[in-house]
Length: 537
Image 1 (tube, one colour):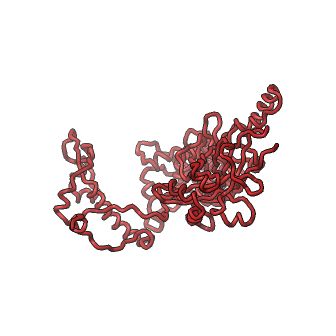
Image 2 (cartoon, rainbow, N blue to C red):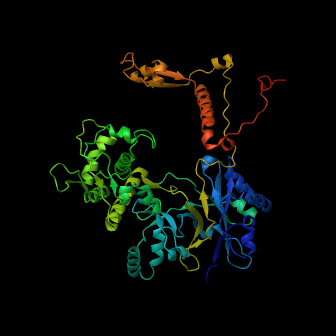
Image 3 (spheres, rainbow, N blue to C red):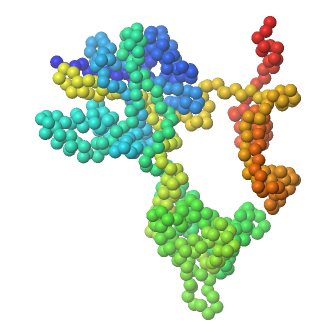
């Protein structure tokens, strides 16, 4: 005998369109904001009317035509629901005893790509997002766990089975274990009343997982991209440029001139460009750092010779390498270190040939990539902006009728994106009642409930004359340098102060952003007096 094939699909009431077409639907994704949303969903699954009502809560928010899910911080939760049936006349529900385990995987699609990626582990390390081979993706027998995949390869007599399993383990990606999101079987009484074998699980939209791999620089900003080239100052693009105040010794006060706004009296455009180049090299590209990418970039700068101004009696230009000269200028112009030794400003920056400009661009791009990894840190599961995701459910069916254990997959869900944390959802805002600051009796009840330990110098600084502070007058503030203070406040009062300051700045910034119409909603309602809220007659 051969066991029936199994279909893993959404319940018909939750996906009428696909089922009318005669195809098994993908997992249904329900969006809820209930406090006890799991119990509410399970109760709705009991009956056909309940499942019909549940269909009205399917995730439906879209942005640019793409389904959008929300994060728990937005008080929205998403539950995937599937049912298992035998692919036989009448489609009887599968016996839960036949199922060894159930789960689902969440796969990512990078912006501009069609390749799916899985969140993988291997050898005790979190590898992060790894491309899934197209053949693997279409293999209905594939299992997320390597132990189950290798067990399927181990057939025949024991000695041959071991050799086959060892050979299969050598294939690329053979030992990668994909993160599995658990699917739970609905309670037996619910399945019995529904006449269905139902599974449910939470769709993750946020995670604290960090891969061992560092974050990746977003695509479209490589060495050959127009955006990258336009970001660079002209000399770093390979363009020739005359340098300001050639022959003079670079001094810290040049920085003040470089920071003058364009068009103002005394502004020197070439000096501003030169200082901007220093900033890009030192801060963005870490050109003078110790990483391999930094050293490679520095070596590329060292291949550029900058001619110095001819002195009396000289017939040939002296030169200085760009790497050494720019490195010496960093403490002078960026750190404003008056004790740093001065360097003579060269005459010009030469035009680079196409090959040299391309090498410099590649070195800059590689250094920026390393800088990005250092600042980004390890890659998080949902870090990539613009990525889309799909879920896919599976059942592991126990060995039966002499056939080995097998894995049965559902179709992929619709692609969806995840709303950023700051985006509003359908949930109501949190209400924070503020006390009436004009009611003296009410204010007396606001006892301090938070205290700050204030260092002596900070406390003395805060006790200085406000007019002196406003004018930026420095100097050592008066006071005992050996005493620190504990200052206690009322959190509601802190909240009121923050609320007042917030409204002032919202109004000021509205002159620029024109945002008050969207981010602030104020509506009146009658004041509730204490007599009305006492509960008495």
